[in-house]
Image (tube, rainbow, N blue to C red; front, side, top):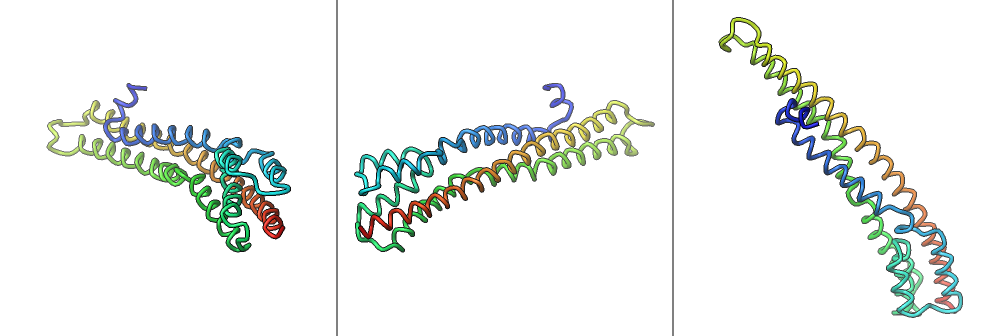
Length: 210
């Protein structure tokens, strides 16, 4: 691998940096977008069960908030009723929507960076290709000190061009695949959070009128 990087020349170093950054973002997103950290399957039913008769106390609300992203949204509704038991339905929904927007922003974090890498890597590879071609033509230019072609310079220019093109695609293709995967996963989570919040808001509204 080191020999390939050396043969590709300096244009490949931005691509190496992009590959390291993309791998870091992919690992981070895999850890952050686990179901247990975003929307545990039974959390909504448990929140409905503990608040069947009344809004639970601050200790239960804190535990719910720290459980997951969904717990954070549900806890915001509990907090709104704890601070003002007679708050309007509009205020209750507004509080939960605000928490939902904050959670959505956190779920989408770094996805734009991954998409940028997927878009920029082929261009960086193309830059390396152009630089390699410049070296090829430069070695053949009149006055280069050689009556004919310079085989070593020609081979180096070709290797720079091909290695950078290939490495740019090697970085871009997985980055694009994982970006589309994480984008779909986040969209599915957001729909799940929206449906759960709507159901929970109706439940809290019934407690508010009780």
